[in-house]
Amino acid sequence: MTGMLLLIFLLACSETGNYDTISGKRVPDQEIWNAVISVSRSGKTSTRVYAAHLVKYEDTKDMFIRDSMRIDFFRDGKHSSYLTADSGIVNERKENIVAIGNVVMVSDSGFTAYADSLFWFKEDNKVYTNGAIQIFSEQDTLYGTNFESDTELENWIIYKPLGKTMRKFDK
Image 1 (tube, rainbow, N blue to C red):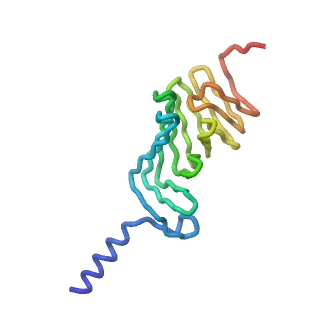
Image 2: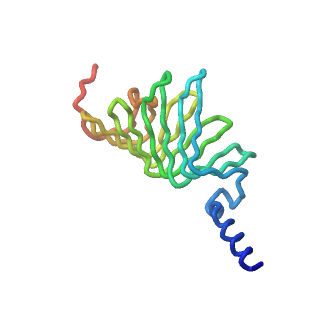
Image 3: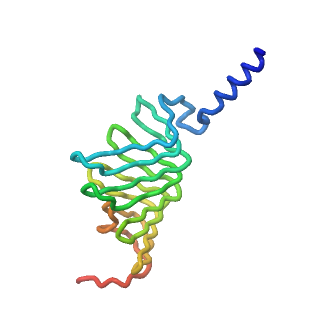
């Protein structure tokens, strides 16, 4: 009977995360599945993060997201775009977010961007990447590196662009 209780206890303990892949094998202060994190600006939701599996460390205020994440961006309380990624990091202190792996950002205005990683900084409410990026819309197929944009993907800069667009530009 004692052996059976020990087996049940060990199986129950195995339900927690695999700490071998998390930040130096430290045990997190909190571990949450299907988490939702809301970030507000002037009383209005600016960002909502959905995490399949989140581990949090109080000392650094870092939350590591594994297994998948989604970020919804809002402007003046209205949805403007969303981003999905394999994993990410949220820093609670500064409320900055890093999306890592198979990042896809889709704006409600019709742009889609693909990158390996994307950074969002609450202070200026912009997304950045210093790596390769691909941007598509009905009129655009662009590739480049070093990208920055508002979260609506309406005002953006792409460095070393390559591709095609049907837009007319003022000189």
